[in-house]
Image 1: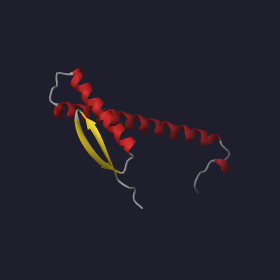
Image 2: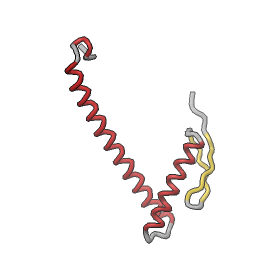
Image 3: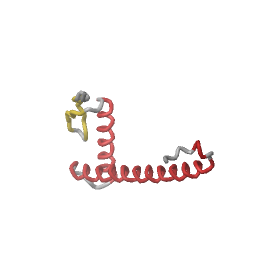
Image 4: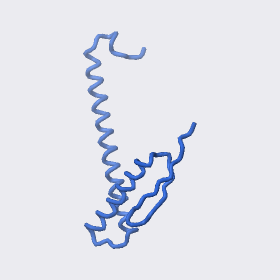
Length: 100
């Protein structure tokens, strides 16, 4: 069974869009608000006037945040795996959960 599609109207940088997605309307509005905020920040902090150029710079900033979060998550997962392996060594052999 597939999730139902929702149509949600959002405003980004003064332009209205109808987004059709499986995500909830609240989630879609939150994502649109994040994008709108990022574009407005670029337009406020730089000498960029054209919204399409600001959107590209905002997309780069959002993507950079995403990549940094992914890298941090991967690093944390690696640390957790190492810690789990270290702790497993201290457990009795029957409790280690090792495959034979």
